Length: 164
Image (cartoon, rainbow, N blue to C red; front, side, top):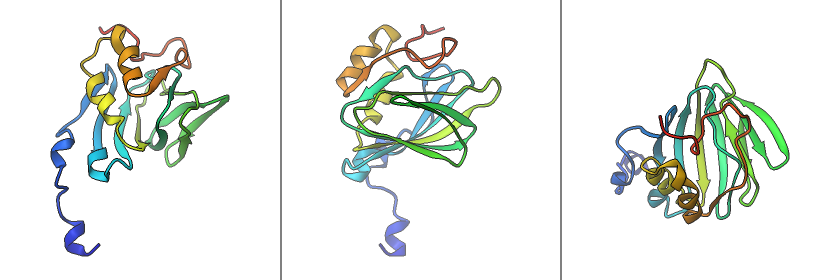
């Protein structure tokens, strides 16, 4: 790729949001790279989660999920393993493996890049923001994501929590 090509604006920039969207109260995302921009190879989101936010145990049937922690720390379950992952670290969850993550902090957000390969799960995030918690499991199933258990801790706010 020459210098001129690298500075070109993606032809399908409209696929990305122009700003941040809220998945649930205290968890925001922005699509940094859509699957349309990579011919379906991957999609990348930046996620910021407030303290005590997280997701329930779930499985992606069709995509691997890669986390790169930029700021703060995340507690991540990867199958039977559990680890606290600090800024500067990364972890990959293979498709078909039950996993969950949360921000265990009481006072600091976690900021991370989340990469799905192949791409496409950014569409779940786009629709998630307008879906009521009672409908989330069905919506997730449409995108090859199965909820398989509760959040990692009892006092977390997740997508299955009632909206305030």
